[in-house]
Length: 238
Picture (tube, rainbow, N blue to C red):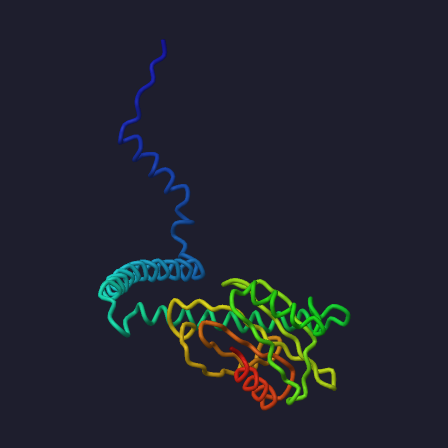
């Protein structure tokens, strides 16, 4: 019967020495510079990641503690108020952006630019007032050179939206986009009116919020013309 001897520590040392003798020339060669630079970059990245985790965790804890403290006290001008104001601003920005997209979608239409045409204005007002949950009035803009084409119902983030379309003798079209805004706080809940001009997006717009309703008048006309139209609309809304 053959027995196997368990390797000893001396045997392991002898094998290690033999391997080193076999590859002595390779071991004596200097480490390539590219490999050294890669190792240094890796070490640096690891150190940066460790510092980021450390300070990031501390910063997150400080911010959380600060926010919880102020929110729990409900101080005027606190983080809660600032956050609500930013939410309201974001909501209003999204509102005017949707108004511009609605303009871009329906203005090119020749045969079906509106759901209900101007001759059925009474039905249009009743229908949209019911859907938006508020008595609506279509402004008259003939003095500014624009006549009603009609209107339509549109979806929105905070509920139904209405769009009224007007056109002048040069076939230029403007739209009035309106609907309820989130009145949880900030500017969207304000009863005061401040016109703002948005030159970007699909089309320039003047927009404002009044009594919890947002309005955006959009069209490819001069800023002065658009402002005059917005002022005329505001003077006629309920």
